Amino acid sequence: MRFAVLLKETDPSAWDTASQAQRDAVFEGHAAFDAALRERDALVLGEALDPASTARGVVGGVPVEGPYAETAEHLVGLYVVDLACMQEALDLVGLLSTEYHAEIRPVTVIEGYAG
Image (tube, rainbow, N blue to C red):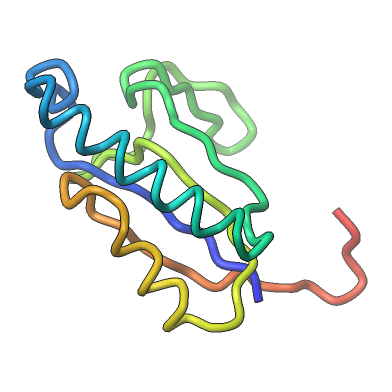
C-alpha cells in the first residue's frame, strides 16, 4: 500500500536559524528513515522542497504570483513509500526528526488511470 508522507514545519526560517547539532539530528533522522525504507524496498520517492516563498500557483487555469494558500504550516518535503499498512508507516516516520510535523496519507488508486 502506498502512502504519502508530507513533512511540514511552522517556522519558515527554522533551518536558517538551526544549530549544527539540530541540522545533524535532522539529517540523521532522514538517513535512518531512508535506510529502513531501503531495507524493505519501500522507497518510491523522497524530495526536499524549496521554501514556500518560491512557489507559484495556478488558480482557475491562470498563473498567479507567490504561494496561493495561506497556511500555518509549510510543506518542506515529501516521501512516497510502499508499505504493508498504516501502522508500519507510523512506526517508520517516527525515525524522522521531531522538528517536523508529519502527515501520512494513503495514496488513492484510481481504477483505469495509469498515470
